[in-house]
Image (cartoon, rainbow, N blue to C red; front, top):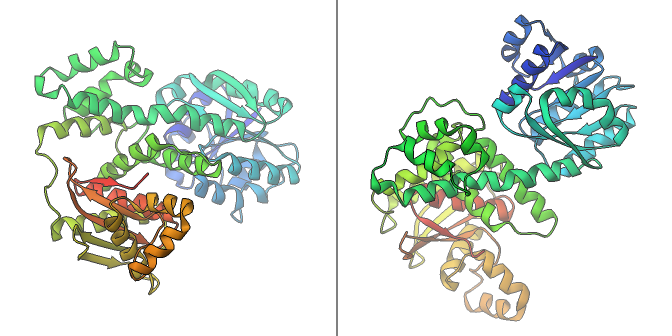
Length: 442
């Protein structure tokens, strides 16, 4: 069987190496061809395009960072969908929302190809040794066809249901693990003052019932992060965790659900990434939080310099999320403007909206998300309130209170430019980057 691998990030490369060593003939493609050099030296063939790869193989595994990357791989002029898919089997392994997989499956079927999804649980180490957990969505017939290949890289493969079921399960199993590192960091912050050797401390944590498998399998990475080693090669980086958590929140919102723990953890991780650590091993998040115990508490008041940090971090977050141009307003506790910035392309009304979100949060004493919930329950009150305040209040998410670690109110941030939820996420990232505590009203 001729096998193709599209996407040679850390996971794709590890799986390709595993398949190559298992005796399979591989054709590989990556947007940056340099990542394929080692595989080519080991005997793999480098395809010029995804379409060329499809033409050369019977089954193609696809694993890329996100839905945007998938869009290019499938829809570009020389992408997968431009090839003759008759008789081909596509195994899509990226971590994306179920609706993304379902849409791709439909397009592949229209071109007489077969499609299953098989996102996997595990990181580079398990991928390299064939110990991943595969979660398949698709028909039983197509799964059976892919199974001999999947068994080479997975210690366990489960047929979850139709296309989309695998993606849903992958998001579910990643959820508690993504939050574990923040929980571990908070736990370690409680005992850091005792001065124990980091290796001993990690060994003790790993031996308890509350330890995640990830800590038990690779405690050395956590120890190295705790002692400040910046050379730890990431098995799964913080940016990847953040992407998955945003995907979880999008899927939950589409289903009318709320994931408050994920939202709060993502806000903390966003702040760590805003400080320049997004590409680091996710275990660094735990070490970063534990280290806070060694430093002074967060600022006691909102200064112009700190307001600038809030704005810049919020704008960086917006750019990382590829959002529309944002407008950010930072107010002090008395409702006075401290700092303001708008990105090129922002509409002329965005300042008034951003100011209104922040001012309304201060006026009501809670984040504007709560204001939205109350307006739905009591619209007449909100109508009267709007009249009493001259229309300055904006009852939609995107207005977030700024508090100190001790709970004192020092100001508020309002952002306008993208969807309300995205605006709010950028507010939160900015507040955390400045060392304050956000209160969204959730």
